[in-house]
Length: 111
Image 1 (cartoon, rainbow, N blue to C red):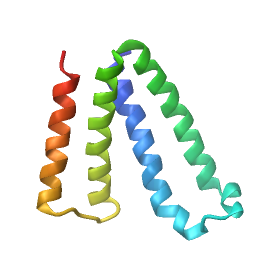
Image 2: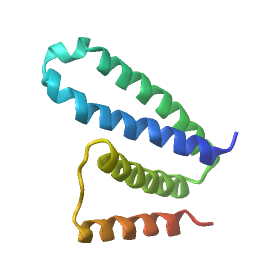
Image 3: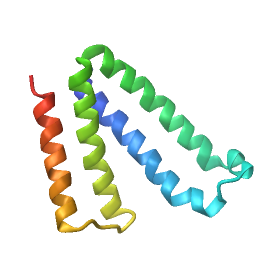
Image 4: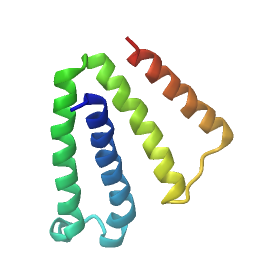
């Protein structure tokens, strides 16, 4: 399977888990009761599958290249989910910074 597809899928799982935590943990509160919440176990399962994908990518890409691609994918997905799901927006200057960061990560990832 193409390592790039696995990289993107793993990052979707990581970022999706982060979004779930942002949405649901405030409802439960950060207490020991949270450990029994089904959402936490789903979060852990998503992270476990994402970690397996990340290990596969790390075995098939150079470390610097894979880290740069994970960074770019993380920034892109986090901002998309932030806008579409959480209805959060950054300032235009912040989006310029995001774009520059993505460009920098992609330049690093080029062979």
